[in-house]
Image (cartoon, rainbow, N blue to C red; front, side, top):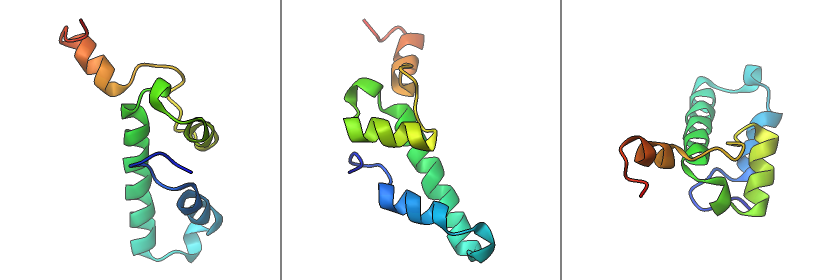
Length: 83
C-alpha cells in the first residue's frame, strides 16, 4: 500500500501496462500529471518517513531519493532554518 498522498501502486502498474499508443490524449496527460505529482511527493518526503512498501515502490519506479535530503530539508538548510 502506498503512503498517504502518493499515487497507488495499482494505478502506476495499470498506467504502465497500457501502451501510450492505446491511450487517449486525456489519459496520457492524466498519467503525466499524476506521475509528476508523485515524483514531487517522493522528493518532498524524506526516506526516513517512508513506509517500507513505499521505499520499495519508489525504488522500482525510479522515484527514490536515495537517502538524500528531501527538497524541504534542502530549503531549510539553505535558509539556515535547520537549527
